[in-house]
Amino acid sequence: CSRPKLLPFEDYGGHCALKNLDSADQVKENKKPSCSSAERLQNRPGVCGLDNSGNSCYLNAVLQCLCSTVPLVEHLLHQDTRRELCRVAEVFVRLLEQMWLGRSSSCAPVEARSVLCSILPQFNNYSQQDAQELLLFLLNAFHDDLRKVRPRPISVLSVTIHFTKVSVSGRSQGARCCAAESTIVSHLFEGRLSYVTLCMQCDHQAHSEQSFTVLSLPIPTHLIRCSIQDCLSLFFEQTVLTGGEQMLCSVCGLRRETAILTCLDKPPEILTLHLKRFGCKGRSQVKLRTDVVFSMKLDLSPFVSSSLPNDLYSSYHLYAVVNHIGHLNMGHYTALCLNAPARTWHCFDDSTVREVQDSLVQSPNAYMLLYSRKPFQKPKIPGL
Image (tube, rainbow, N blue to C red):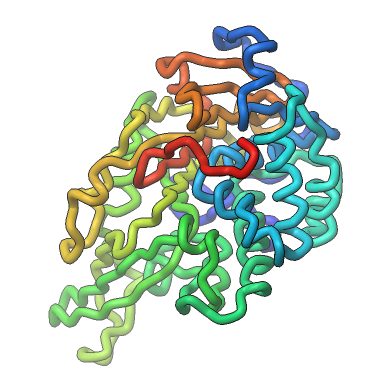
């Protein structure tokens, strides 16, 4: 993935926020959440801070979210899985062991960062990076690593490196797709969008699909405060392509105004939502500070295909939030994650960890939201 350019907010294209946020780790939250004692947190499995190794808050925040994804942790720490791990997954498993089975209040993900830089050279520097883009690359790296050790394919799925929503040639095009065997990554994080293109002249319909791992949601620009449902509605609203964007109708044989209808054909087990806060407004580079209100439970049923039972997707459960504090030239990432065994939320600010009340999870700094279709239970980990 090349370095993305900033895009106008009125154009919903582009999957990445501004990538270079210089000196990002110098900015901290003004208001610290209430915290419990460090001694109590130190002995809580899965609650472990991560040392900052130089503008690495974006990496630490993403790793905390993955560490809190219980089905992923259970699979990777299972004895059968650990016997055949390749380099990337093996290093991540060692880090999970420290975070879930270790006794320290924090650890240094030096090995994880070293491996990351070796396979993804664009991260081999001390510049601030985009947490959402890193998550996409990491999931793809884990998937590629895990499918190497599978003796036979389980099913054929498409894994999209990133999702870009554009109003050209069909409104949505995946940047790069590859047919691959199913892994725990694709099983958990992969969903599928369905598109119907409708010729406004002859009513001819065409159908297409696209897999995704992250949905990048536009934020209404005219509101100071909105809901995550508003962002989803804006993403899934019907679009009509006119003028130079008209599509060629196979029946008419001419370019016609075309309506694009989008729905979720296969909602993922883990739904990752990225709020598109960075972009251009005219010639200015800006960050949208709209307060996006979200709840602990998310109803996806209004956006699911009519062929699917809506009741299965009416209650997704929030378990992790990545916050971005600051602005384009200086910013800092933190993570808020639900600890499944204790059923408590914690704020991870690099190596500093604080327990927080549920009411403090909501924040105008939210940048990514991770929801699970089923609530997490205490993970079944050997030695826990």
